Length: 282
Image 1 (cartoon, rainbow, N blue to C red):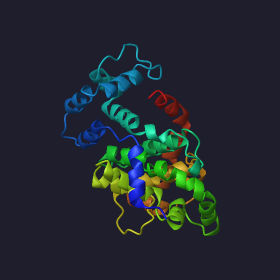
Image 2 (image 1 turned 120 degrees about the vertical axis):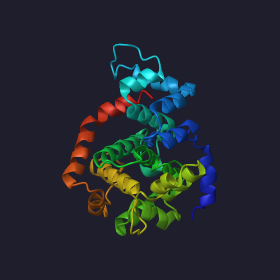
Image 3 (image 1 turned 30 degrees about the horizontal axis):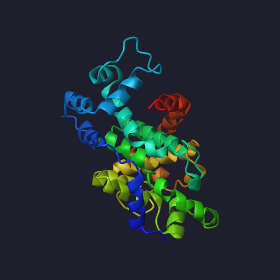
Image 4 (image 1 turned 30 degrees about the vertical axis):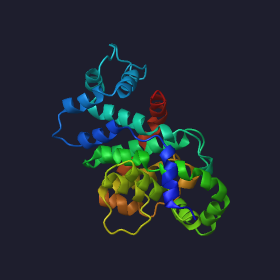
C-alpha cells in the first residue's frame, strides 16, 4: 500500500501553481472587485503578461491591430477569456507529459483536463453558478494526482484492470483497493499543500463522488457532470470512462435537463480541435 506522506513528498517535483493564479482566483469571482484591480495584478507578472500578449497577437484571433498591453487584451478578449487563458497557462504544464501507467499518451491528460475545465465552465454559465473560476480551476486540476501515481500504476496496471473488469470497480475504487489511495484523494491533498482554498481542494478530492455524501456542493457536482460528459464524448482516457452512477441525480440537482447537458457536450466536441490548436500556443 502506498504512503500518503511519501506521495505528497514526491509531489514536490511538480512545478507549483504561480502565486498570481491564487490571487486571481481570490478576486475574479467577486463582482465587487473592479476590472482595473485584476488588470493591475497581471501587469506586475512579466511572464504572465508575455504569454497573454503572445496569444492575443496570434493568428487564431486575427486582430487587425497589435495587442500591446494587458488593458488592450482585456478589452478585445474580455476579462473572462483572459482569466481562463491565464489559468490554463499557469496550471497545465505538468499535465502535458505522457502517463503510461494510466494509458495516456503525451498531451492526453492535458486535453482531458482542459476539456473538463471548459465544459464545467459552460455548465456553470448555463445554470448561472457563482464562483465560476473556482469550478474551472478544480476541473482543470482534478487529475493532478495522476502525475505522482503514474509510476506506481505502471507496476499495478494488470491488477488494477482485473479489479475494474472482474469486480466492476471504477478507476478510483480499484486504485483504493490495490494501492490504498486514489488519484483524486491525492490530488486534493496536493491542492491543500499548494495552499488552495478548502473549497477548491475539496472539489478536486471528491469530484468522482466515491464517498456517500447527502449534500453535494454545487461546484463538485458541476465538475462531476463535466467529467461524465468528457467520458461520454470519448475525450477521457479509457480507464477514466464508464462510471456514471450519479449522472441523473446531478443533472436534477443542478436543474440541468439532459437535453441541455447533451447540447453542451456536442457544442464543445464540435469545436474541440480549434480549442486545442489555440491552447497549444501557450
